[in-house]
Length: 163
Image 1 (cartoon, rainbow, N blue to C red):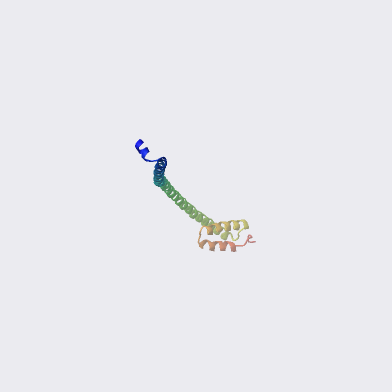
Image 2 (cartoon, one colour; image 1 turned 120 degrees about the vertical axis):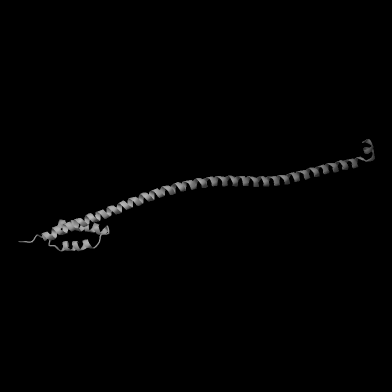
């Protein structure tokens, strides 16, 4: 080492040391550059991997929720079927009651027709009662047979015949 120092003067040694320091600094900067590039690539890959994991997580949660929703929809469909059956049964019963009421009204009007036509007159209250029942009969879908009877009842005098 003394031989080396004796061959070179102080300026040359200082320049040599400065060059070595600059070379070390350059190598150090190059290592930092590649390290940062590697971090960027790693962070990019890591973020992409995290995004994929997040998407998979949401997909699985959504899939589970979809399955639960399908089960709820199936239960609702079953309940709706039961409700529809109940409504159909009730509708049939209402139709039967309406039909039965029509028959009762028809019987009432026929009976009243025979009574008041035989009597030869009708009072206002009885006529009003017959007309109200006849309106119900028409609303329930009654036919024209009763219409003829009601027209005959309406044509009757409102006072008893004088003897």
